[in-house]
Image: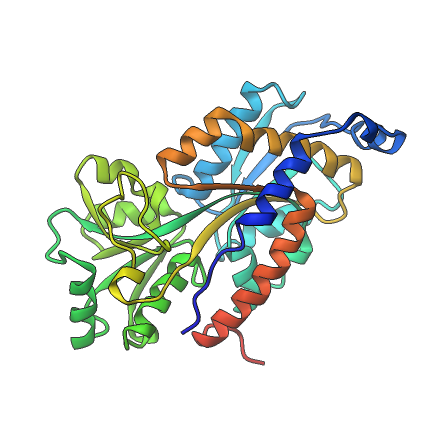
Length: 340
């Protein structure tokens, strides 16, 4: 079994953040000044291709707050939720505003996996990459009173009956939650196709289903679990990180510790419509770099166990190309890629 690692580390991160935040005086050429000349002249829409209440929505609203607090934009910003068809409805909405820098979309791996799985014709090449902002990991969570006391309990029960445990994921088949679940089960000798999986339109909806007792396990990004873990309402049985994470997940084992070599990161980024101008891209490079460098962004990332790994527009483009190749290979192994 190959292991999926996000490309959100090392040279990408250091080079991108340095380039975005350090501008030498010599760089103030006429071209650079021209590229800095564009600014929004109408409200900016930050589009969330998922329902309100989940991690993608939370990311958008934090970006909106920081941009507002920094007075970084001369016009208002509006968060617009457009869930449905995986991420396709929201992504298609942004893609249709060709060359208009007033529309941004918060991205996640479904930007890539939806296309590989044949769920949409809109892929990462349909957008202007603007930034990668952070990577988080998935937790396998149960209610505090669940009879499932450990990750081993889940595997043992499924070996007896693969459909006996219900799993909530969001916001589509092919999400990192779905892929993490499939990776774990395939390596444990359980057919992922036989699992009982319920897909919700946001992480907020999936955790509500868990709390209501409608599903047994919620596979979701850790930001969706922090307050529930702190309050004692849920227990996290395993995480998809390569090593143990800080509190409140410090005592949660990784799947790798338990002999299941499944490591997968859930990244979030920002894209704009296709054919954005260099001036528009330069404007958002500067603003999104400032968001990622802000104390508020870093504090929130620490609280929610998110790895801050900012990349600018140029590095994001290469990142998405690499991610497509890796996810295409991985989804093919899991039998989830579209067959021609």
